[in-house]
Image 1 (cartoon, rainbow, N blue to C red):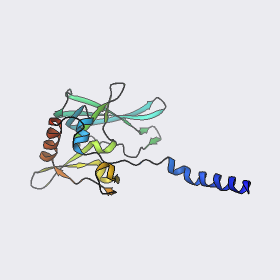
Image 2: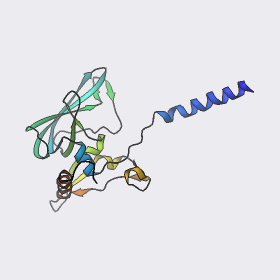
Image 3: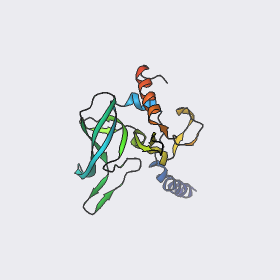
Image 4: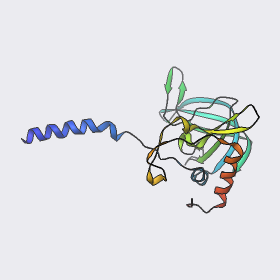
Amino acid sequence: MRKRGAIWLAWGALWMAPLALCTTLAPMSVAQMTQAASVVARARCLGTRSQWEDGEIWTRARFRVAEVWKGRAPGNIEVRLLGGRSGHLVSTVAGVPQFVPGEEVVLFLERTRSGALSVTGFSEGTFRLRHDAAGRVFAVEDSAALMLHAGAEAGGDGGAKARRPMALVELHREVLEAQAKPAGTK
């Protein structure tokens, strides 16, 4: 009987092991991302380059800053992202944004321990700018392509949720309002 119990226990552990590698992300509000970020900026991608660093492929994306909404940033910034292409090897990391030269974005950025800039909340901290036929500019959050868990602890309804596109002026207003509130308030 003991042997059978040990077999069932081992089988159960093997069956559950893949679940231990899963990650669930609760969506961050614009206010939470603003408070977590040291820099929020509207910028245009100038280019990207990938290389091996510390046993991983990392991409460095360069941007020309058009406006700084929070913090301080020079005219050109570099953002370090896990993943990329080095020779014939490709490393793709779910949730890490990829950038294309010429595209315009709003970035929520944090400083890493080394001082490099990194996107806040994986793809949540990237809003791609789109122009409609009337000339209005809309911000589309990268996480709109991901399904994030909006559980009760995040103030959500417990289901999967993606943020809707919003007018750029609305996003800018939300960032400014978040800076006027004390950290930790909604």
